[in-house]
Image 1 (cartoon, rainbow, N blue to C red):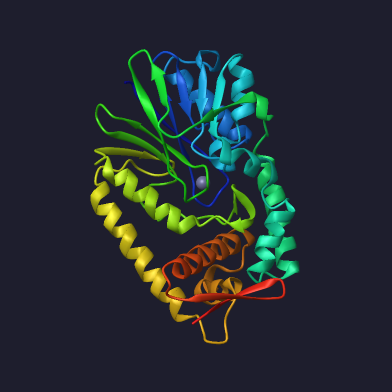
Image 2 (image 1 turned 90 degrees about the horizontal axis):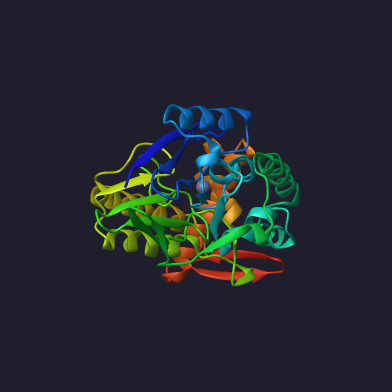
Length: 318
Ligand SMILES: [Zn+2]
């Protein structure tokens, strides 16, 4: 299977996003990049250097619905003329309503986020959401776990690997155990479990870190030889990276649990202490709050701490 990795610029702190061309019939893109003129021009240029144009693209497969990965979908699809778009169904609602929805507001207020801080996060998100065009439900095809994506020269199997987002998917070529992981596995960064409503019950939080650990174990069960992540270099030493992730998660669990008191503390206050250094910019603040929530909920699920409600706000307790 001929794989062409491309690097597409993004305006985000994370830097470039990786886009992969599968040069087999039907020619397929895994992710597309953010909706910026620079990203579109770069994608066009790089395809051109491989003798390809948008009209050659027949299929777009999305690992998840974050703007740096999916923003250009509509433009690329329209430029291609006739390409099918695939994404997990748990990503689509998320795509159209992140932080705009009442569920999201309730969810963050319940974690102790003050209303004025939430408003700041929402306007940050409104800006970020300009980096993506939304598509109607009818314009997307659903990725389901274990589904085979067929090519003339082989196939990719879908692995639903929730954690970073509820509907994050990876794709494995079983013949040589190559995996495209989106943001589930990244060479230099431990992926952030982003706070989201549970797709099965929007009034609850998605247990992102607990799910993420299951996804990591699942990826490991395939003994991958090569992983193409959504950012950064490819991973050829997943076993080592897996243990590094586990150690980092274990350390953070300890730090988070040590901040929980008998009287109780909100996830927001834990985030403020834990990530004091990066609490200034809204986007970092949002990721810090996400991380705190993910770790606190995971600690609750392991029975390390408890959780109690007082009015609309939840407190984690020793
Ligand atoms: Zn992402």
